[in-house]
Image 1: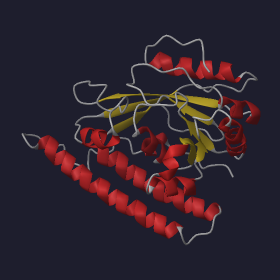
Image 2: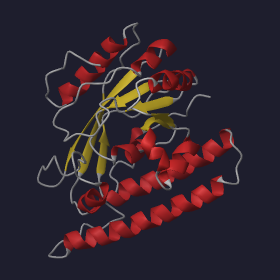
Image 3: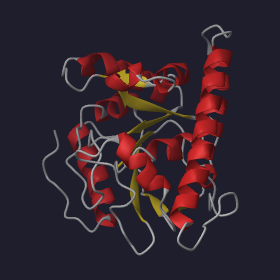
Image 4: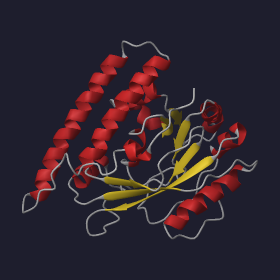
Length: 280
């Protein structure tokens, strides 16, 4: 089944957070924002728990997945709005039946994309065991990959290919990790083979952003920083914005590494970075 058309403006809204959450000023401004946003985060976690309970009564199948998609889409819209991040897109729609690849800066990248619905992800195997997120990801049909085992790629490729042939959008962060957003790491090209086999295009998306004062590091989560430390830091930010630039499609060719190079070069241009020749 082909996924419905998606408006990127729906990925958290054109300007999420500006109406619903105050940008309090004065000595308690940051503390006020953090408290309000943490309350909404707890409310969202309660909704996700309720959704897990509800899905337990649905048998596996398309209907269960549709319920999961709509429920997670709603939760992710709350998360994006709650974070106070304004999302800006350069194009009105995302195509179906495409491998969507993007640079990876933060945990926020995932709810921003899921807020649209109608897409699935290639996710790290370890996330499968996380409370709430793991069961909901299973219900969404997330395609799991164990990056520590090279042979696992052979199991994942057919699943990604099948999803693309069904007309789904499959989102992939081919760097394999988050970064400080200043450069794009070399892409792991293995899963680009699924686009080659399915005859599907690759759609590069360049993610850039900053908080008030132009602090580009503020929205990133990388290195040794834990999620527990990152959450309150990000939720206390003011004036944060993310720009998602949808680059021209990369048409399928027999060489997956050539497709990876083209996608990487498109994203690197937005970050004013020289393209990298070698991709694994």
